[in-house]
Amino acid sequence: MIKIYLTAIALAVSTFVLGQKFKRFFGSLEYKITVEDTSFASLYPDSRMVIYTNDTIVRMENQTSSLGSQVTIRHTEKQKAYQLLNTEFGKFAIQANLSNNSDSVKNSSKYIFHKTCKGEKRLGKKAIMYEVEHEAYKDKKNFLFFKKYSNKYINTFNEVPYLPVVYYVITQDVILKYELVSISEYIPHRDLFGIPTDFEKVTFDEFLDKYLEFKGQKKSQE
Image (cartoon, rainbow, N blue to C red; front, side, top):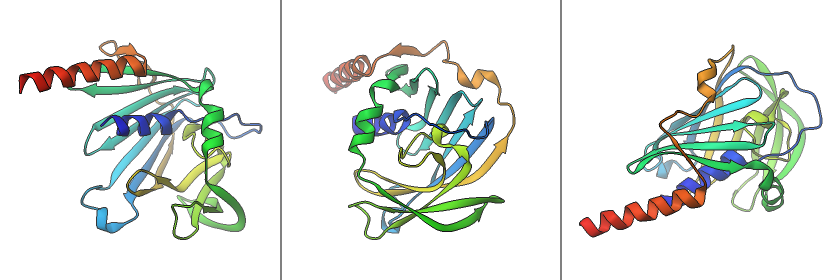
């Protein structure tokens, strides 16, 4: 369980600084998440990731079979984020300072990106293609990006500044394919970007202490 929390937070808070202009985006992005190896399909059923943004603040919602809904609210300029978790032992907003993570995330990346002249049409828009290598891949993967929009809404794969359309994430057990299936431009309601009043703001260490205390109490009651 803790490993899953750590993976989710790491993906949510990786960041980098963009040096070029993109079209500002207000609205939502929806990604379909599937496991590449179909033999694991029963263990990792298809899920969705939905992102809402007012171009400055991003709300990322992940639906998982094991943990239910996971929500991350990230401020792209202040470099701060909260991961909202509704657990058996309470509701928590786990703080993360993105500015402390950028260098370590960038340096630890083992993905090698090769720009190509190829592209595909996705959702009525032209997507450019990169071939990507990683020691966990059997073969190169084709990643697609919308060059018109910034990476900052997804905030992963520092090597390419564009919005990912199709990409692959390596987890401890499987490789997950993320595919953009919907892009809608509108002004999202501002309440989406606030921390609910019934969530306790904590650091990850404080959350871990509360989790271990809960596990200890639960074990003593068995």
